[in-house]
Amino acid sequence: MINTLLIGGKGTIGAGLRTFLPRLDSNYRVVSADLHGATDKATQEDAHREFIEFDASRDDDDLRQALEGRDLVVYLARKDPLGAMNDMTDRVFKAIMDVCPDAVVIGSSSVHATGGAYYGYTRQKNSPIAHRRFTEVDPWPEPLSVMTEPCPTGDYGVEKAYVEAWCHRLGAQGQNAVAARWGGINPTNGKKDEISYFTVWCHQEDSARFVDACYKTARAGKLRSSAHYYVISNNTYNIFDIETTRKEIGYEPQHDAETFYGSDVGAYSLRVD
Image (tube, rainbow, N blue to C red; front, side, top):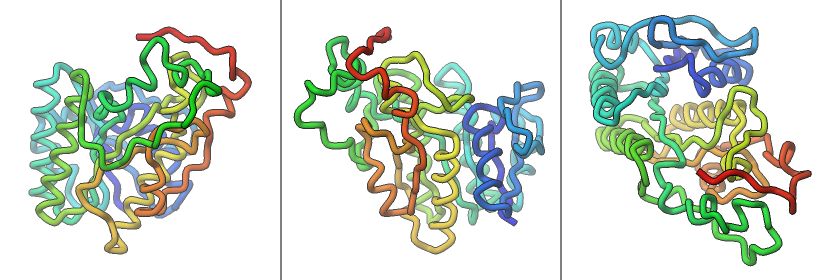
């Protein structure tokens, strides 16, 4: 049995992991820790629904008890404002170091941690990639390397960069810990009316494939601890480096955003935030 704790497991990413991890390997037993009364976003009947309710930002005893005996811990919880979020991250990672130093840890980052490096392609009003004018893009940009250091452009990216720093700290102390730079994950795994979503889109199944690959690579003694990886589906118009993730941990994404967006080529215009 792979004793797994998702901290913040009722949300969109957690719902996908609770559904697809056990489908990939029946040995996963997934327990979710979340706030009392938090909405469960899982829609599939076979999603694991073993819950522990507490506030990870203040209930230290409950947090530490929940961490006992875990093989895999995925930190997904978040809160506002930035200072409170970073305080919760401190509390969670300190508890992990004390209680389960042998667990594989995946910290929840985001492509937004490197927003300063890719926004020019995906957010500028005249960007041909953002508006799917692909014939104007020659050559296609080199995928943004997983080695790209954090360069956030707002508080959300800053909080994710802070999680990445904690993963580095755990790695420096010998624990298997990596940061997942999640792409765009949504509960329906479908199209979303958001600028450039087709290039950051990630199916929930692919997010689970990433976590599964990290865990099994770690247990084989081959995980590059302290790494940060982009977790994107196998999108035709991807601008992020997932080839390194394939090579290093055997990540095998199965989905492509063009399933939803392909018919829109040449006639695509969305709002720009």
